[in-house]
Length: 257
Image (cartoon, rainbow, N blue to C red; front, side, top):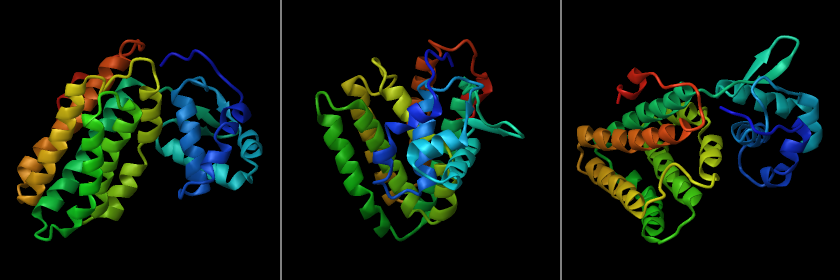
C-alpha cells in the first residue's frame, strides 16, 4: 500500500490519548486500535520501527500496555516483532485484506448456523435494536458512511455475542483489524462501499432476511445470506484498494465463498 506520509510514534498517538481512556477496552487494546488505524492510514511506512518508549511517553503509560498493544498488532498482521529491533510495520497486501474478510465470513457463517439450529431464539431479541438502527441509517438520504459501516458491524457483533460459542468465536473475530481497516477506508473522499442509497438499503434487507432465516431455523439460508453480505463488501473494498496497489489478489481467495 503506498505511503504518502509518516510521523514519529509520539506524534501519531497523541491525538487519541484522551479518547482512548474512555472506552471499556483494555489499555493495550486502546493503544493497538489507534496504532492500527495510523498504520493503515499511512502515518507509518512499511518497514518503519514503532518504538515502545516513544509510544509509552505519548500515552503517559508504562511500557507494559504498549508491549501488549504491539503483540495485538502482530496477531493482526500489522507489525512484525523482530529480535533486537522491536516492532516493525508490515505491508498490508490485497491478499491480506481478502483473508480478513474470508475469515470474518467463516466465523459469522458458523455463528448464524449455531443460532439457526438453536431452538431457543430469545437471544436474538438483543440483536433487533441493532438492526433497527441499521434500518434508520439506511433510510437516511445522507448518513455518515462510517456510521453506517459501523452499524453493520454492530449487527454482526450482536450475532456473534449471542451465538452458542460466543467466547471462542468473538476472541478470534476480534483479533482481525476490522476497526482500523474500516476507518482507513471510510474516511477517504470516495469510500469504497455504501455510497449508493440502493446499496445501503440492500445491505439492510440482507440482514433483515438473515435474522428471519435464523428465526425460521433455516441454517443453510442463513449461511448463504451471511456469505453474500461478507463477499459483497469484500469485493467492493478490494476493487477500491486495487486503484492504489500494485499487487493483485489471488483468484482462489475470491472463489472460496
